[in-house]
Amino acid sequence: MSGDIRGLIFTKLNQAIKRGKRKGYSLMIVPNKKGEIACVNIPYLIFVTFFILMGINCYYLFRYPFRISEIWGLECHIYDLRQIVSRQDKELRRLDPCLKTTQEMEDALNGANGFVVEMEQEYGKLQNQKVKTEALTYREVYLPGYQLSSTDRDISKLEVLNRNLNYLEEELALTGADLAGLVTKYKSYNRQLDFTPTIWPLARDRRISSGFGYRRHPIYKEMMLHQGIDIPTRTGTAVRATAEGKVTIAESRGGYGLLVEINHGYGFRTRYGHNSRLAVKVGQTVKKGQVIAYAGNTGTSTGPHVHYEVRLNNVPVNPRPYLN
Ligand SMILES: [Zn+2]
Image 1 (tube, rainbow, N blue to C red):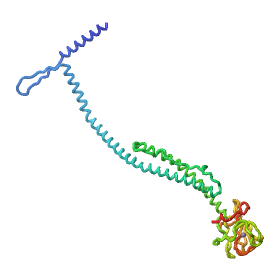
Image 2 (cartoon, protein in one colour; image 1 turned 180 degrees about the vertical axis):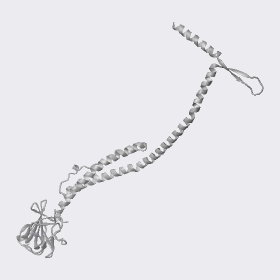
Image 3 (tube, rainbow, N blue to C red; image 1 turned 90 degrees about the horizontal axis):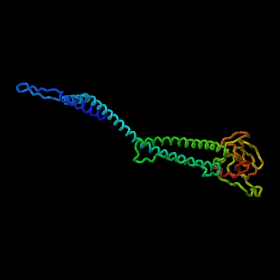
Image 4 (tube, rainbow, N blue to C red; image 1 turned 120 degrees about the vertical axis):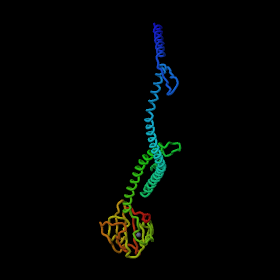
């Protein structure tokens, strides 16, 4: 059955081709003066093929102007893109110094963090605390993305810069908090210093005729603890409070003669003996350096001088280390 159908199709096709060959057109070529008229027979298939080719040609010919304008548009677009690329090139070249700046900031932050640790140690020393250096943490700032090799593409430069900036922002906040903590500590320490005896009781006299400790007493002639230091001076020399505080004694007290005692808080008290005249009253608040009395020779004394005592939690201590 299928063989018959194939044969039938073949026969039909042959007939169609023969019809096509027979069908056709004649092209007459007529000369404009003398001569014979030439007549060319053009088979139907060739005629149709010719018109199809002509049609295709016309299609491309008409499309051409549109294609040209399209190309022009694309060229303009390419030009714009080139401008953008060159602008971005410039921008990217500007990133190099930015990246360098991030490294400088890294160094600066490391410096600041080192400073924080150093100041913490100093603060510990000032507070007479035993500082465990291992307890102090030095936070090292290290930009993980900075190392940029030349093979890196520019886009990664932007990524690196972005990462660096984010990292630095976090680190800046941490270092800022550390520094703020230090400032608070030092401010309170500075306030504490106002209440700590750190200056000499006399503005100019610096000679110590008798130091702190056991000595043979110049009048009683026996070994006794000298609870302060003696600074010889002229009678009438102004005696200054060595720290801020409140006057707790301002009167004559046996061997001390005319005595002033000031309570500074933080466990500190200071005493100034043998004065000729007092300038403060009990309960009065005095500033560091304020005149509280005038030197003299009252009480158990062999000549005009200031007997200066520093008491820590009511125990007399050597005043010498407190004097600047
Ligand atoms: Zn003395």
